Length: 563
Image (cartoon, rainbow, N blue to C red; front, side):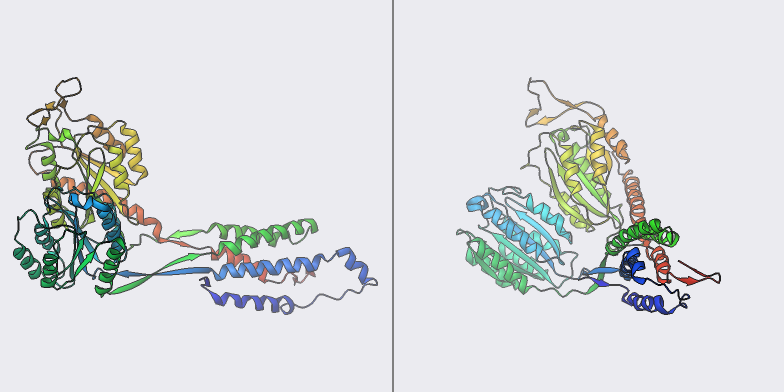
């Protein structure tokens, strides 16, 4: 709702009305023999001009009072519940569109819990961490969107293993307010962890488990036991509406107790009345030019009003905001060429080792993880939980993804979607550089997405072959494929303004990489916050313009009267 930031300014209107009549003595009276003739000659110009002046003053005062709207936002200080979502991603979830239905309901549940930390784990042949504990709901939604049955192997259902591993997600979370939601349509067919062991592990961690059976082939008794022995509840959902109602009920049961503080987002609309006043000033100036008098004060007021409309400002220095800082996005190339063994034990596992080691050298920088081949996958949204990221990197499996080719444009596009507020981002890519077609276009795409590219050469310039099953990878003509570090990788990074690092067998380069990354994020942080300290001083020229109009147009200067 619109209100005025400085309502008292309207007190100037009756002051102007009084001053127009009382401030200065009247001019000597001039007697005329034919008043009607004078009125017809003037054509009512004085009356119209007076109304124009009144409207100018009213609009100027309205602009000076500053009509604004205010939107109060409640910000939370990270004391909500910790929620782990365990989603069955075995092949049986493809039946009857179960998996897509479950994803839609999970997405809706995430939207209704905006202030809790959430993690996502999927399971099929094995349990796989899809997203560590984080407040970044946007990244979590992106990961959920790209999940599909079989992402963790789909022939079996490692239900008990997922339950056991899910307890590790809460390792650094507060011991109270821990909730786990387990959704499955099947039974455990792996047997890697006994049910009693999994339940005991979850119960000791203080986690309440809400189990949801989907379809008609799950074991009701087992899911009820898991829920009952952990303090949760079992639900049976065989239709989308029932499933949605279950999540709505859980949302009501698990209300968070969160400490809050408020911030106000203010939007000013002073330019609307001021713009109208400028239009009337132009009209009045035209009348004064025709009359050949009073041009100077009207013209001065017009110039000052135009200056106020522009909105002059001064920089008050840097000002911190709640989302200041930057994010590091680690991207791992998982294409077939990363199987080459010119780095030990192979390029991909060498890059994986470097990425995990880098986490030990960083200091409070949020880190996200992406994987790319012919498409890009978000493995983890930016988070400060390095231990969870290490577990995620340890659990990366490439068995179920297509590793043919590398789409660098898809990687940059996926990374660009991880923006949050004014946070700057560095995209550190571990790759051999194969698949880059145009370094300049790729660097331009990254720049437009506000990304700084860093590169780590996960390959050597020496040509090597690529293992493929029991033999070597061959092209369509049957020739053995030889791969080496592509020089276009370094050129892309250079064009982006980032840093390029050559592979080293020891870990002595990690400290330097971390320092350069944090320097880049620090520089982007400073420039990004500089504008936030600017104060709009439109009221100064507007007040001067108003003073000109607040003074009566007729005054006495000792040498007679003048207008």
